[in-house]
Image 1 (spheres, rainbow, N blue to C red):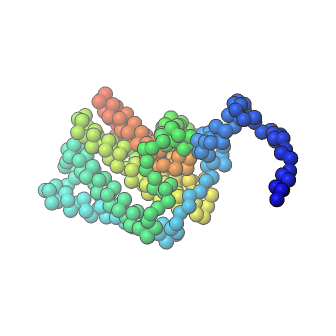
Image 2: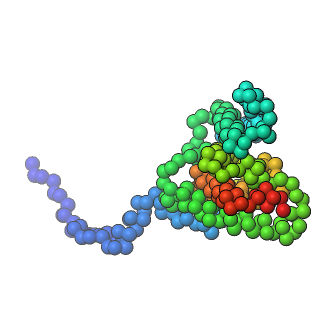
Image 3: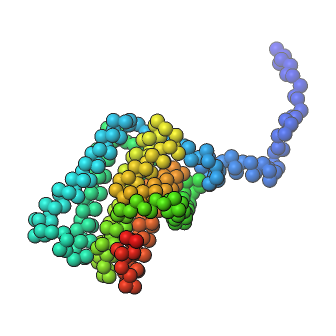
Length: 312
């Protein structure tokens, strides 16, 4: 039996645009491939002036009930620790009146108070969201990884906020001062620290731990990590930034410093929105508080009455 006839072999034809075997790709092809192989985050730029990126929301699994219960519980325990627990501790160690303590003893008392408030406050927030574990990666994120990675490098946004904070707070103070807001008077946020500052290292370190470490840790988790992110369920992110900044300012109970506190809160919210890492606002907050404390310390060391200066 004869074999069936096979069709004649067709010559190989190279498809249009196809690179010949054994040849190197063109530089343009190599560049396109390298760009395409990058992840979306790595291919992005910082986009500081791209305002669309400041309106990115969080995927928050809890709702209004958890937010209201969490904030009310935190505020209640915050007051209870300061007004009930700490006086009990003071009496237990033989302190009848805080006014009779030395600056060093007052700073130690303030440190113990802030430690308790921080531990209790973090416990309350954790309890409020306990039913939603494990949380999404960008909620309450505190990570030292990728500090310079585009577009969310937490250290880059943090340092930018540190540089901008004097201009933001200073310009706000100047505008409201020109409008006559200074006539309101009252106590400022630095007055309490100025009243107990003294020229010894233990006092400075205690106050630094309170103002530049523990307070930023707790406040950023509450106002940015919890309040701001949850608000984006219902309002655009810029509105959530403004509302959380207003709450942040009001929580300091200083009508005199309210505009500056709200302005600082907005800066903290904006930078946190871009980095999605709480280390960013914590760094800015810590740098601001620590700088103010250090300036007060230097003024006292030069014989300046900072309490009188702040009152004028």
